[in-house]
Image (cartoon, rainbow, N blue to C red; front, side, top):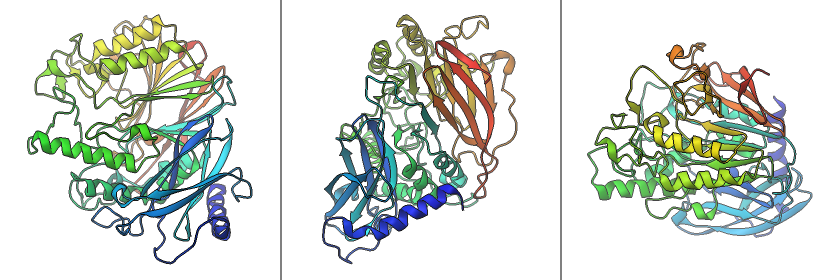
Length: 509
């Protein structure tokens, strides 16, 4: 048994022994309701969001996880130690049937740059214990930041070993850059199977999240550290934003009203199942997810949404390639979000500016002049505005963090990607997937390498990126597992780099 597993075992044992220390009357009305685990997210210097969702039978077809049609009171505690001998915050919140008995607690009054433990209690049952932490105070650099990020966790393609290995790192922060779930129906030839058909309605989305979140390796990663999350496309439907207007329905079988309802249901279920703050609660078919999170004076995270706001009007009805990709008005995040990003970069509040987003940012030439509309290559004017914008604003250390493509990449960013001698103005780190794509391979050859001298590393294994940020450098490890078709594979570092403060681009450690 690993050290991490022993700690999880201790957490559970202590929680059970300490059940009587929580307020409230116990009853036997419910079976164990914490089958989907616990999570925390969006840390601030004085607080964090705590999450859980009650479900006694999580895979029930109605999406309500076996819960009765009634409200349930849930107690919560935050302590400085894992045995809860020093509880510093506590309270009660109500979980409602209409919200699939999801719980979001925005805790404040905590100390900055501090590690905490949390748990919940409902109807006499105590939850697993989670570990979280607050960000440093806004005017201090604080300690080095150990951060890991990943994306794309297709349940059917493999087991969630990557999540388990991330949890064992005990990072300060985890980023998930989209495709937390996949919407398709069951494929019986895969490693494991989705329940039911393609998900299109609220009950379907709720059950799909429950199926994913019941996985013990995913629960371990959520319990290990606070998360920053943004969705991509599969949380709604594959490639859904790649049409002439963001929000148009790509598949013809749904009317506009039906498509709007599907987005409404999908984003509602996303909010219910993520450790997000109140402002992210959806408004119908729209959800506000781009946001900034400060990590003291060390780093600023600019979390983008590259799906909801795309301006594709110049590209007609095709989605994959756009013959008019260079049209100046086209924007991947939308002009309003571009301006929001540049305004935030101009503030230079941290040594490192980390742009968390979904799709491939650097140019990826393949001899085809048409722009790939599911990457920033389809929006070169938009990318050019952002890159020139951070150069004009004197941003010293811009690093783009990317998911989506099921491969790991390390890229140097240039305003003129066609000129190998152009100066490097930033760096992009692309994580591989948790499981999407199934077992990988050992190949590291860069596709069309002669056309892409700025692309420095490529891996086809599943995995994650581990980084350590300090005042002087960012250490980067591309962590991979050899297989996801079987449980429990070991992780290894396939390649390491570093970025020196004030010197954009990739260096060997």
